[in-house]
Length: 142
Image (cartoon, rainbow, N blue to C red; front, side, top):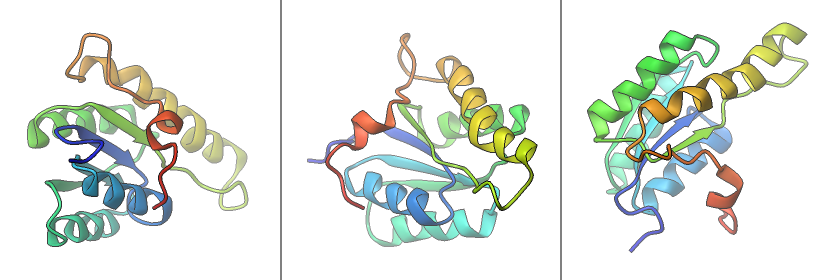
């Protein structure tokens, strides 16, 4: 029995690195995982790694976290394809040297705000989906 049995998780930035490792780990803990990233090929690979490994359901979608309409579509797709939404891990981000200041703030700060402010409309509970990643992942190693 996993810590996330029966839960549905949306992870942004799931094409590589921490996002990919978290998606694989959360699936191993029993979650159905929607892998989202601006790199569609990368998230498709992550989802394939999950399903080929015999873990729970996984799906992939292209997502630019700066685009509010895409965030809403991603949340709705998660509900439609995986049956709900319990947890969102806002992992997408870039380093300050990769882009200008405005783009860094848009992705690393505004993208997280947009997703978190939209989540309650799509969550399974009246309280809203959990977005408290540190509490959820405490003690885990990917």
